[in-house]
Length: 171
Image (cartoon, rainbow, N blue to C red; front, side):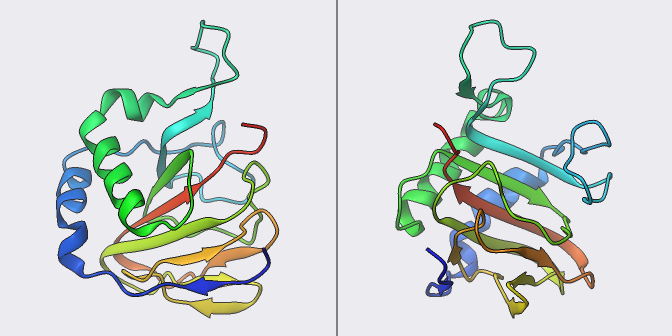
């Protein structure tokens, strides 16, 4: 899928519960050892749902439920509810970003469609997909992040949360 689909805008109150929950936790800061090349080493992000098992896992599984899903099951459940309500495809994982401005990239570990949705008290930080600017502020956008190059504008001010609903490659 190389098309970009802008879905109907979501009412701000639909994400109020999730916003309140996210404000109460500390989303992990990514550093030079656990972030992708080109991303700001101080960005905050975590994944809920299924992720590739990390070194701490001893159960032998290649994929497993993320540590964030285990530590914050109420947030994971709220993310699943939002996904079931607004995401028109099945997904394995939800990436949560806080104040992330990403460089041009493709999501090489994802497969198929992704749905991006942003919210919070911010301006700027729009998504640029294949050199065209879109606004995901309470406005879900579906595109194949593994095939289409995307980034954010670097004019973010305020607190921005973004959710990316996606499927892992080789799941």
